Length: 387
Image (cartoon, rainbow, N blue to C red; front, side):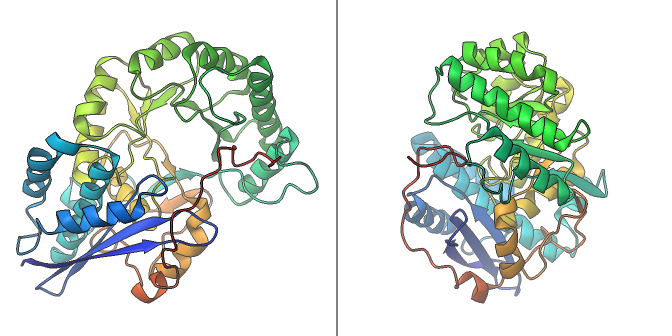
């Protein structure tokens, strides 16, 4: 069996993130899907990179996954390792695993050691209409959170900090963040887990002050409080607060996660299968986390349909899986483009049983959402009102 073709699809729905899917075909009639992620505005450049790296695969055996990724790391990464590079490798690697699973007529997790669980707890985000309240009002946040809980979720994540993003925020911004956390806790009650996102932007002093104020609301975690390039700052925060700290969305491959484990910077890691290096790299990172008693909560807000399916294949076979992010905004699109979409019921997703990564896409449906160009990204927080 040999790889015979690589095809890319840049998909841009009106009210959801732009993503890039990649499809590999073989001379055995099998195909595999992968998903690629990058920063807004770089989609076309990333598409060219995926197509370029796909040339490495033409005429090669899709079962030789480790040889492919190692070749790219050796020949290319040393010259231009970056988010785009690791994401391109990840998308192609996921597609290879999809082919391999179909070749052996089994889910990928059975090729990685077999399942440790039959379902996956997932978390959503505050969604829905807040009535006539201003979107920046803490009570509006509470209403949105309650909407998510009514949909069956027992955990939800949100970033309470007002924009524009900056490392040093004043007391007014800190107070507003605390008020939003308080409003959501009041709205959802004591039994729903609330996950605090910080997006790697605060200085340690600000992160510590806010964390200590919100501890009484029992956050499930405090995600990436400080910049990923300064793990010592994250270590400082973790040692001084009583909330579990998450690290990993912006770390790529085992090499970068090694430092996080050695420095004891995290209670939980959140690698993204679509940019960390793919399925096997994710599995190996999770294995590294085990002896450090670090849990794994796959990141999923940058990836969508295929990324979710690939994450679950890894989550199935690692003993330290904790919870999975679910891309709520993409749910209606996934229902349209996937022939067998993964569905959330009572805040969980059942273990997929189809061969490969467990999902397939409809190329005709993908064509309904052609790429129309880069979108301007607002510097305002998504819940903030425009002036």
